[in-house]
Image (cartoon, rainbow, N blue to C red; front, side, top):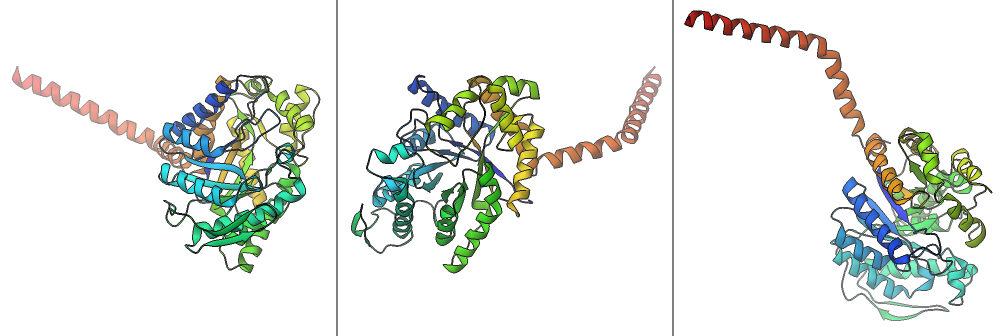
Length: 390
């Protein structure tokens, strides 16, 4: 990859049931402020309504608050579960956010990942992908055309629907469709010429499908007369970084078990399969399976290199999956270390300063000698001046 790789966070967010939700959400927003100061490019907020751990019910509200606390970082819905909402109201809300954030808004769409969410409104997982396809088609028409939209299916009835304000972004804000292992997200991204959010990029099924997903996008884009751009492809994966391997392993003992138990026994989301019964087995699974990294900046950089190779052509952004494996202090340190030592390697910044240091080091002996002679000559001139005055 020769272009600048963007970095960000994909924040479900995960929190242990029973903790103070007010404080937990405040920590999430504080984290976005930290990332903004550290130079991260993007932050994506999730939508979930059940199961007790992923406690953000509205990515739009999280974005509205975060936008007022930050200056540079772009903010995305990661993702709005389109099967739960009338597409006209989704389009209206994201256009409103586009104006409120002065174009820092990004729109991520998905079918809805937690079956317990859909069950409360009479939806099964067998319906959600079809509704995603219907909804995204309506939303793209609303966003890209002034023509009214009439559409009807089993859940929605739109009659001459239109947006009464147009997007702030010109021509349009970034749009991405979520994908784990199935071809649905990649197919829709290609069909509409938008980006892809590979949420399960580092899982075995997702990792194996990376290059295949991009092939699907290109094929669908060609079939529908669209163009696609690898810079709009975002890969999501977990990392925890510390100054030493030993420190990183100690850090995650704080909360990694809750994250595993949630995916193993609570969330009915079989694509996110993780194994391990003890904390040590869980840590080993993360590092040995390739799903993520618990280690040093060098190990985090190696993981990104691995994903670049597997993608067979590169991608535009790496999103760190928010997980709360470590306590708040160690979590902040991890993001800071990645910003300080990992991001520059993929953004053209580490090489230039390292090369400048190498060149200066090679020239130092000769230049130091010249400098020393110049100082000695100055001393001699001054001594001569003093002698002449005397």
